[in-house]
Structure formats: structure tokens, C-alpha cells
Amino acid sequence: LRKIIRMERRSEFAFEGLRYRDLLRWRIAEKSHNKSMYYLSRAWSGSANWNGLTGSESNIELPSDFISILKNWDDGNFPIGGIPSIDEDGLPNLSPMETAGYIITFYKMSFDPKKNYLWPIPANDILVNDKLIQNPGY
Image 1 (tube, rainbow, N blue to C red):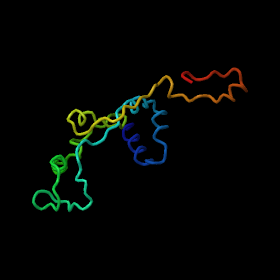
Image 2: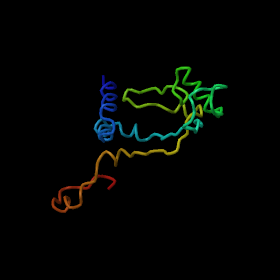
Image 3: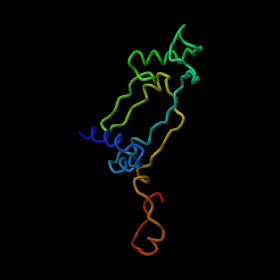
Image 4: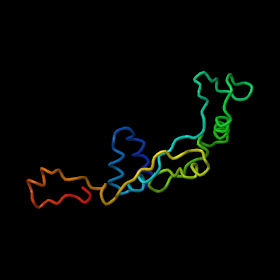
């Protein structure tokens, strides 16, 4: 049930700026933010004029990498060479596609749970109340 609720919130509130705070509240941000960000390594057709056909029916010459992406799609897979598994927290695992060479890491995110679950207390608040102690890492 938790997986369903988390996936529903992810899609229902997409682009509304709530995802990061959900991850913090559920205490799974270090799991989602200690991952790689990927891009497709395969070449797309590169032409907006492509008629969508392959082989001799195509109106442009298609790169072989692009043809293999289309074959993956025809075989029922995502263009990235497989279907990612979704864990109990609703987070995708794309590492098998990286291992197969379909996607490439371009950035490794990092999240420090000791620091990033808490935000800094404003300096003015600490000046007003001397019993306040700044959160670790700030």
C-alpha cells in the first residue's frame, strides 16, 4: 500500500514542487538522492523529417544505434533497453540499463542524511533565543 501511495503522489503532484519534501518526510531522500542521473547513449534519428519507418521504407538513413532502440521498442521494452524495476519506495532502478550500456551516468547526486534532513535555523532566530542550537552541518 505504501508503494502505491508514494507512486500516486509522485504522479499526481508532478511539477508542483512537493516531491522533495515528500522524500524528506518519508525519510527516503538519501535513497533517492544518492543515485546517478543518466542520459541516453544511443543516437536518435536526429531529424524532425523522419517518416517513422525503418529499412527501405525510411525517407532518411537511420543510424544503427537508433534502429536497435526501435527494435527494443517493438519487442515491448522501453527505448532504453529494458523496463526498470520499481522498489517498495516507488523509486526506479536504472542500473541494469547502465550496465548494458544503454544509458550513461552524467552526474552523481549526493545526500548527507546528517545534514540534509534538517534545514539551518536562521541566524536571527538564534540571536533572539540563545537556547537554540544550529542544526548539524550548518
